[in-house]
Structures are given as C-alpha cells and as structure tokens.
Image (tube, rainbow, N blue to C red; front, side, top):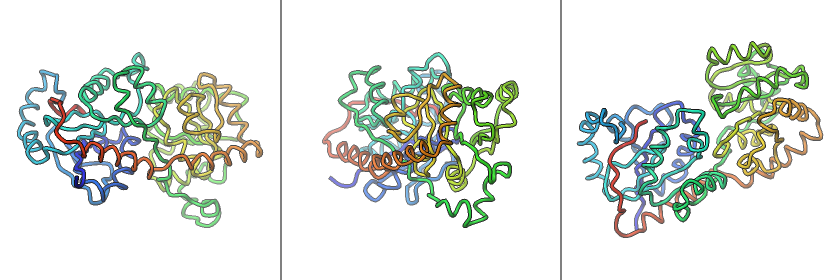
Length: 389
C-alpha cells in the first residue's frame, strides 16, 4: 500500500486569523509526518510555524473559481495546477479551510470545524464561507469533525453526508505546563512576563477573538455589575480593541477593570493561564473549544457558556452560565473564589483531560488517510480551482 501522500492546502498557515485551525493541523501533522508524505501548499510565505521536515510548495494566488472577475487569476494559475496534476496525481487532498482541489479524479478529506456560518447566517459576513464549504463538500470522500456537536449540526444541514463522517476530538496539552512554584516564586523572569498592573493581583482571563458570537459584550456588562468581585480584574489576550469596543467598555464603566495585553506567545500565555483565578469563555456557539482544555491543563477553572459543545468538551470540570445573562456570569466568577467550589472543579477538570489528546486526534486522522490511500481507483470529483483565502 505504501506511505500515504497528502497535499495540505495551507490557508490557515498563511494568516493570523485562523490560529485554532492552524493549531489542529500543526499538532496532527507533527505527530504523523513519519507515516505520511505531506506537501504543504501555500500562496504566500507562511506566517505560522510549519512542522519541521514538511515539504512546502508555493502555488499561485488564490481565487474564487466561480467569479468571472477572477478569470485572469485562473489563467495565471493554470500551469501550476497542471503541475500539481502531473506531480501529485494520487495524493489525498486536505485543505485547512475549504479550499478546492485543482486536480481531477482525486481523493479528498474535509475537516468541518463548526456550522457557525450556517446557523448564525444573520450576524456575520458568512456568504463566502458557506459557498466555500459547499464546494469542498460537493465530492468529498471523508469528513473529519472536531466534536459530536459539530457532527450533529453538519448532518442536520447535510444528512446525506453522515456516513462519511468520523469525529476527531482535539487536544489541549500543547502549551508548556509550568508549575505553580515556577510562576509564583521560582523564576522571577517568568513573573516579569505578566503585565505590571496584575503582578501579584487576582485576575480572570479572556483569550482570543471578541467578534459577534464570541459574546465579549456579556463579559464587559458583567464587569459593571455590583455582583462582580470588586478586586478582580480582567486580563484580555488578543487583538487590540477597536473604537466601538473602547466606547462600549467606557460606557459600562469597565475600563478601569480591564487590562489588555495584546497577542502573546505560548510561553507567556501559559503564565497567564497558571496565574489566573478563572478563564472566561462566553461564546454563543463554537465547534469545540481548545481554550477550555488549555485552561484545565493549567489548573484554572473555566467559566463557560452553558452550551452542548462546552459540556461535551469540559465535562464536570467547569462552571457554566447562561451566555445571555451578565449577572449569571458575574455570580459564576464570584463562585470561583470559594475554595471548595474551585477545588472540586479543578479535580473534575483533571479527570476530564484524560479524554482528550493530540495523539488521539493524530491517530484518527492517520486512519482516515490510510483508509483512503488503500482504495483502488480514483475519485469521481471534478474540482476546478483553489478556493479564495
């Protein structure tokens, strides 16, 4: 049968906006590269780390294959697409974000992370994403989903695809695990990584995007309530606040309670996790929730939305709140300060972590590749071009 050959369409490696997706592919590829011959296809120089030893090949600019306005890009890409057809005629296609295979008659894997674009169609610019997903699912051979909840949503919209789906739960052990002694007493240089305004202070933590369904406004409103612990500040890791966010935060009189530290590397993020009293994840909808496992890994209590997928990921190792109620969030955060509640939740989180690992995710992905590689003959598909980035 030989070693599977896989073309990874590296859209998520080319930008800073899909860190969670990049993380999935980085961790899985790093663990399977001895058994899979990977080639990463990128249209620009990768801005995210590529697993050591993975072959990288540049392709032409990405374009929308159904847009007449982008016909010149299609013509420009034609020689490169012919080269891929000739050099990799049998390689499995696996795009990081719904890119379509320019070759014909190939085997394809699609990872479906969530159905947010379909379920939350009214609150974001999701038209292009829905079109990309439809094109990539049109002639797919195998589908990987990252949670049972995502699988249920996918099959609700596309019931005919159910037999092609296998669930690949993610991991959370990728961040460097620091001991309490290292963070608090053993290494002053690690203390220095914390923002000066929260060193030695109690704080809770918010990490990642804050747009639309991420529901950050609920956190800001909770901070303004009298039920929020008076001496507990919020550290925000992520992109800068825009003008509308700053105005809302000031209007809610929460500006003195928030410390924005920008984007940080994994080592610094590890320090913030370990030092926080709790981690807040108020999303209205997600496909999985890697930060929940990150928080549990560092022994910090996740305070998270009461949604099916978060129950699936966190188990009993979290405190849940109604994401439409800032008051419930404030009370949930307050409860974390109770030693008995915090201890019980952390113990449950430690047990929960045994259900998840990147090794398991890699094993499921590897089995998917091997099953497709073992097939005789070729796919029926007639994909036409790389999707837009």
